[in-house]
Length: 288
Ligand code: C2E
Ligand code: MG
Ligand code: MG
Ligand code: MG
Image (cartoon, rainbow, N blue to C red; front, side, top):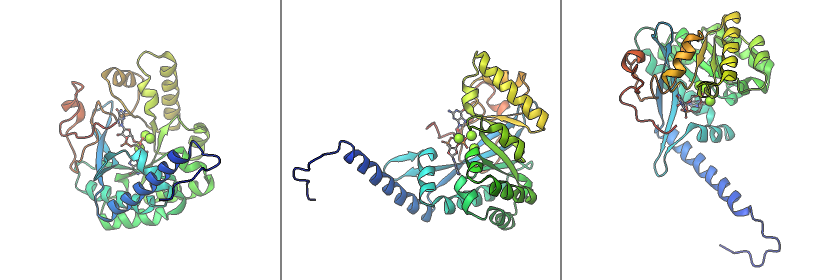
């Protein structure tokens, strides 16, 4: 490779930036191959009612183990897939996998699947979901999609139109990472959400911070007055769960209840098995 001979203005950032771009392109290619070769996995993390301690469903979370680099976080590879359009086949694959797995679960448990803003904007989701329900036999009321505010922001009119069609199928819609977007109240007013997922940022700061408790109270009051149940994400300690229970939070999810696990069958109630604060057995996901 020709080396620059006395390049007049050597740029400090050239090499690393070049490296980053090459790295991403390589990862994108590897991801494409992993999808083709069916080497991605879906893990499931339990969601439960705080009051009754019953499991209500599981969130599907993508897992990719790179042949050389090991496990790669979805917060790294999802943005890459969104950049180059791979998220469309990938999102469809996850949805099919999750619905296929969930059909076998007992007690009408729900499966929650994350949907990217790019899918909402560029895929015909109502038609796709309808087709997947037909193909897998999963009743639509057992599927819930999780959207962040980012998904809605780009084109609110289009998002509302699509969400209404998705809801008309009988599929539920949850607002993910609530509290970290910048127009949460307007979003709640205008969009027909079935669940609010309080971002784990608030839960992690719960221990003893009066401001955080005040914010959580306000969100729970908002949920109550809009008749939208609130799920708290990222619960890791008994103390956090106790506070949320006391404040009247509806549902819980987090490492305290269970790590994402490669199970397709419904597990036992996490409060019975894991009430000592230990995660459920069989976990192999400690990457977070
Ligand atoms: P998310 O949808 O908000 O998912 C929750 C994330 O928090 C997951 O990270 C989960 O493993 C992690 N988590 C759960 N409980 C705890 C806890 O108690 N403590 C801590 N520290 N973390 C906890 P994960 O699996 O790495 O996924 C990260 C993000 O990647 C997800 O955030 C979601 O935005 C995205 N993602 C994952 N799977 C998919 C997918 O299939 N499609 C799309 N479009 N995005 C996905
Ligand atoms: Mg989610
Ligand atoms: Mg979330
Ligand atoms: Mg998130």
